[in-house]
Length: 108
Image (cartoon, rainbow, N blue to C red; front, side):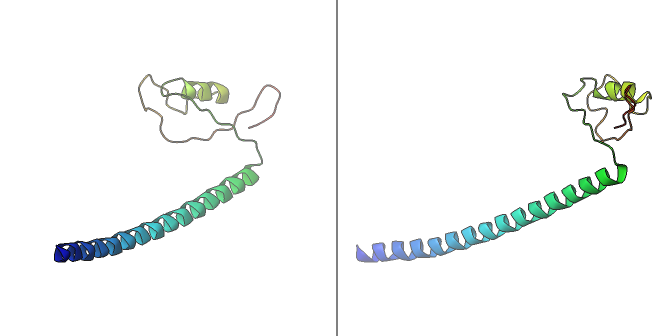
């Protein structure tokens, strides 16, 4: 009876050790990922700030559901057909930038 309990305790101890090692490894991985995310977030913000300062213009974003007419609206606002606008899902996936001059004369 007691030898069975001893063996169970020994296995439990070894399992706990492996579990602790796994937890520590996961904690380290999470910490590294959080540091990476923070670094990427800061880098992207820096690039956005630099872009805004370089252009000196306010930014606008067209956001909406797939196939909702965002590209068509952009083409109309810009007075061009540079952005492909077709009645096809996922036709325009890449972000694009265009300068728009409103009737008031203000650029964006």
